[in-house]
Amino acid sequence: MKSVLFVNHTGQKGGAELFLVDLINHAPTNWAACFLSPGPAVDSISKDHECFVLPAESDLLSIKRESSFLLQFLALFSLIKLSWNLSRVCSKYDVICANSQKSLFVAGLASFFSRKPLVWILHDIITDPAFSRLNRKAIIAFTYLFCSKVLANSQASKEAFIASGGQEKKAGIIYNGFYVGEEEEDRALTKTLCPGKVATVGLFSRISHWKGQHVLLAALSQLKDVNAIIVGAPLFGEEAYAEELRDMVDKLQLNDRVQFLGFRNDVKELMKSVDIVVHTSIAAEPFGRVVVEGMISGTPVVATKGGGVTEIIREGETGILVPPNEPDALASAIQTLLNNPDLYGRLSRNGLQEARDTYSINNTLHSFQNVLDTLEN
Ligand code: UDP
Image (cartoon, rainbow, N blue to C red; front, side, top):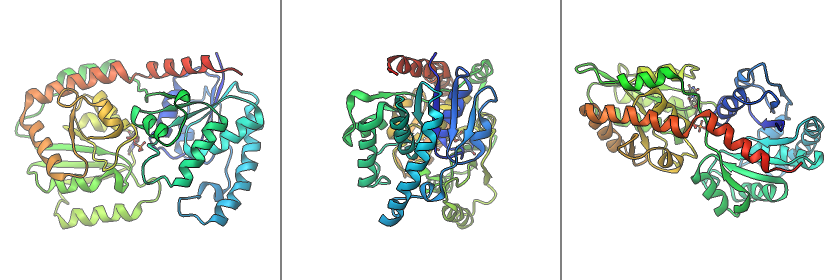
């Protein structure tokens, strides 16, 4: 069994990091993780696996699209130094796997220095305007030069990679994998609506404008007898947006109906406790872990159309899809679901079945193992 060193630039618990934690914790013990900055994800890797932080200089981690040319130039030195240090660790492993975009650059050079094959797991739709032209060109160049394989987290992410000039022959797909226990199956069989009870919907995403928490607030203002929990924190500096959301709650007089719970580690339990899981991203989601997690919880999901979500949900069968950034459509989908117990039960059962069949952690491990078998050392 080949040994693998996964490299990730942040230790914050975003979707890509949770993918990595789930993958490694269910993998052979010769798979290890290296984070380039500390954070709670580091402590979530099981003690059976090697896991360490190789800290990147702050000039490298803070590089942004709008950073000056001088800053980007200076960060190059930090990049080369860090890659060299990483390459010395890499000699112990058969394969290096970069799990984030920033880590692609570090792991790319490290794979060159150590002569180890590199796999990149692509968690983004790189045609999104959040990626500058220069950034996209650098990504594509690194994949040409250093990657043996690029595994996208959805068809949408893969297509965007190829549309940006990425090599089709290197591109594959690896879906996020989830552990599904027996109790989830029982839950789906029994999940029903309580007539007369005030319904609660749950939104589970980091607080960020593109995750669209404001769309849910606007939809709630059109619904009677529906409360909401908003779960998540501004992980990558979106505190101003979090403030805007609180102002919006005041303005729409939703104080009694909306609760902000901050970042939680018990998303699974919270999803089971609500009547509907909503997903409100206003831009195409590269994958959408929360959509699959909602399905696994047995709670029906209403989600925004686009990107990976459209691949996950079969409209009207395993969930309901609504157009992005349209509070009216979201409000109407929530109301339809609450008024229709048959539809509610069907989505609950089918959603879980689909998630179990397609997004099990074993399927993901198996796909990754198959890719490892094709690599030559
Ligand atoms: N999540 C969490 N606690 C929170 C909010 C979100 O653990 O308070 C998790 C959520 O369960 C999901 C991940 O964060 O596994 C978000 O992944 P997704 O693919 O939905 O979005 P991303 O953050 O990758 O854009």
